[in-house]
Image (spheres, rainbow, N blue to C red):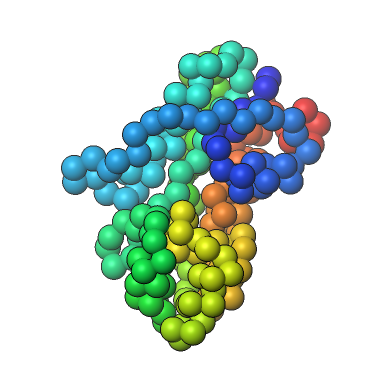
Length: 193
């Protein structure tokens, strides 16, 4: 079976390249707008599964891997800041506090239509951040298209006091520990296939 990563994220692609497997990338085109009264957990689950189903329309005899991630702070879903001013406001609010990230992961078997879904939480505990630290970080990493206004795969780690997660790759967007288990459940061994 082929492996298809349903994502255009270079970070997810780089994570999957850590495993000794061949795969293709295919970007799903879905509306990621939250539904009325949709909880953060329901949103990340729906988007992960919808991405896999959309990609599956284009492939046979494949395992589709898709993922989605949201950040939650003060009971609000965080988007991408888009601007420097919004990024400063986000990081200033996070100073000394904790942000929860939910990373949804779906593996869909196009032969059977069966899919597996898991959500992996990560708690990011931020240091007390000075205005100077925030400004310098944003100048260097420019994370304006990243939920939460930081890149964990970049310099964002300098903003953290600690992380809590059962899978360290979840924060970057593709939980490899869980993915390996899901692929094994579909009969795909990452070390021998």
